[in-house]
View 1: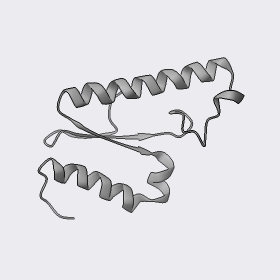
View 2 (view 1 turned 90 degrees about the vertical axis):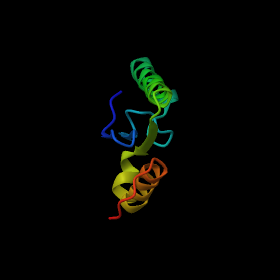
View 3 (view 1 turned 30 degrees about the horizontal axis):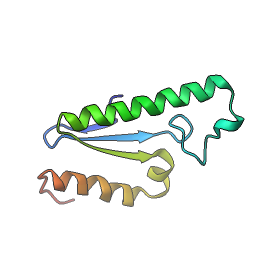
View 4 (view 1 turned 180 degrees about the horizontal axis):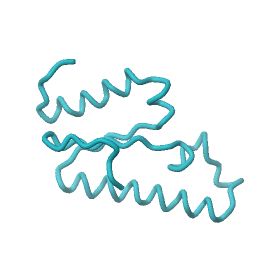
Length: 94
């Protein structure tokens, strides 16, 4: 799992996860999905957790957003991302 955006100087990794592909409970129902999709989504979620853990172990902060939140609440997502950068020493203003 590579981040969608990486702020290398501040070690902040940002991921934007697709609701279906990453198994959001409102967009993916394992009980109605075929075994292929259940296994695929499970592997994606395991990969997400492994990427988060690996980056954290290397000293990175990881921020994840759902794709639909980026569309419906971009300002809120931006503030969350900026706060992660501020905690890492970013001092600029927008």
